[in-house]
Every structure is written in C-alpha cells, then in structure tokens.
Image (cartoon, rainbow, N blue to C red; front, side):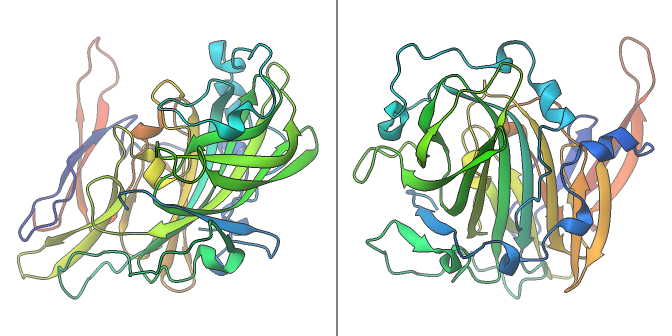
Amino acid sequence: MAKPVARPGATLLLLVGIGALAKCGGPAQDDRRRQLAWTAAALPRGPHELLTSSHTATTVTTATATSPIDAAAGVSATARRALSGSARRPPPASAQPSEALCTYNSLWLPKLVVPAHYDLFLNVSFNPNPPDEEPLSPPPTKPSPKFVYSAANLTKGLGPEAVVGNVSIHVALGAPTRCIVLHAAGMRLAGARYEYGGAAWPGAVEKAGGPGAKDYLMVVIRFRSALPATAVGSVGRLSLSFAYHLVDGVDGLYRSVYTDKSGRAHAVASTQLESIAARKAFPCFDEPALKATFNYTLVTPAGLTVLGNTDKLASRPLPGSRLLTAFRPTPKMSPYLVAWVVGRLASANTTCEVSPPGAPLPLAMYATPDQ
C-alpha cells in the first residue's frame, strides 16, 4: 500500500482489495454485530473518560519516538474461532517458576503467552488542515526520574495531535505466571488488568529487564499474584490504556501532509507497521507468528475518509465534529498487517476478474482529490 508522502505536490494512491482496504459492499450480518463486545453508543467520548482514579500510568520511552472498550464478560465468538490448532494453548513451560517472566528481556517474546484476539479503540486527534507544513514533533518534556505516573498524566501534555486508546487482548497462558511480556514503544501505558474465570488482577507496567537493560521495545506487566494457566480452549483478557503523540514519521501510526493544487496543506494519519512497528501503534504481541483476529473502532475528525483492513460495520457522528467508525473483525493475521488511513481522499470503484473464474473481485482506489 502506497503511503502519503510529506512533501508539496505529493500524490497519494491507495489500491486495495478484499481482505486489505477494500470497499466491498454487502448487507450487515447480525451475527457479526453480536460478535462485537461493545456498542458504538457505549463507547466513551474522549480522554476524560479513559481512566479511573485507581489507575497509574507508565511512560514507555524508546529511541524513537480513545477510551476503553467496555467488553462484555466471557469470550467472543470471534476469539473462540481464533483459538484453533496450535493457537488453542501455548506449549507448557516445564518447571518454569511463576516469576520467570518478571525479569525477561530478550529479542523474542516468551512462548508462554499466546494471543488470540484484539479489541481496539483509538481516539485519533489531529488538524486535517494544518496551517503550514512544519514537521510535527512531540512537545519538549523534562525527563522524569520516576517510571510510574499518576492517572491524569496519561493524557496530560499530549497536545491536540495525539492518539488515546485502549486494547483488550484475549490470551492463552500455558502455565501460571505473575508477569506478562509484550511489545509497546513510544507511548504511555495505564490501567493494566487481567481477567479470567470471573476473577481480576490489576497490574503494574515496567520496562522489560528493568532500568538500564537493553531495550527490545518490550514491557513487563507485573500482577499482585500469579495468574493461573488457562484451560484448553479458553482465554483470559488482558487490558491496557495507552496514549502517545501523533507525529510526522515513517512507521507506526503517524501523520503526513500533502499539498493540493491550490497550495493548501492537508494532513493524513496512516499506518506503516511492517515489520516491527505495530508496537508503536498499540500494545501487542508484535511477532509475525503470533497471529490473531482484530476488532477495532476509530474516533477521528469528521468529514474525512476512514479506512481499515475490512468493511465498515457502523459509522456515526459524535459531538465536537468527531466521527466514530467501527470495522468488521479481520481474518486471523499478524499485528503488522493492521492498517488504517484517515484523511481527505477520493475514491474510484471497479472490479477485476479472478482465477479460477468466479464472482468479480470488487476493488477501490483512493487518491488525493486532485488526482
């Protein structure tokens, strides 16, 4: 997929099909709607509804640098279908102490925890018509010697161009463990929580390996007591809130700018997650082999085109010139294949023949309106 190029006169062309960013129409299926563990009406409206006073926030720093989903109790049908074959349960960790992952720090994630499904909510804020084309960088902040912050600091100082969200990950645990290791880079984290079997465990986020350790862009979530191994065919739910600056860049979820024929600048928010940048867009198990299904909802500035990997399930306006867009669940796939584009775009629709012969494949092409 071609990406927006941040230079005057740049052309944005997106050629997409079914299973990618296809604009493939079709009646909404009731069972798909029931698979969503939330409803558009239940989603919070902004960062002020993101946290409770019991949460703490953690900043995950790297060399590079909304609102929680109110998930229903139990495992969604989408998550259950994702638990097939070898993904049904991770291999057992023979005689592994429950705190072994608390000091884990390596290039690859441990195999004790296997994701099956993600529920994602992102509140993406940016100015679609920037006054100039100056590069957008995070506001300067004084480094803090503390790693844990108050709940209010999850969004404090982010400014108007930011991403605030929540992820709920269905995971299978191969053995009891007090800690879970996953990827997150360049973002603040808060509200870590694990739920399984009717019980809940609050967690604290720490840098993998501790202070001074080599940075593999991982974090460790430490819980008050060991989490039990999940039964075969069942999953627990790991939830995290996150926030970060939306800045100009080339990977993760980033902002870029194009200029139309009249010389007016337009901003686009889009993703480039291959090969290890999904961890810059949302906390995840960012390895190609750790495939899962994804449900996601985006809240964005109104009046823009919003694209994802799948067809839209629902879209409705929100107060403050905002737009909520929910998408259908994705197939089982690696995190780096998640894709979003938000911007002022125009489209042309067509079909192409497929081999072996069958129904024509709908295609949609997106470009800047001048193109």
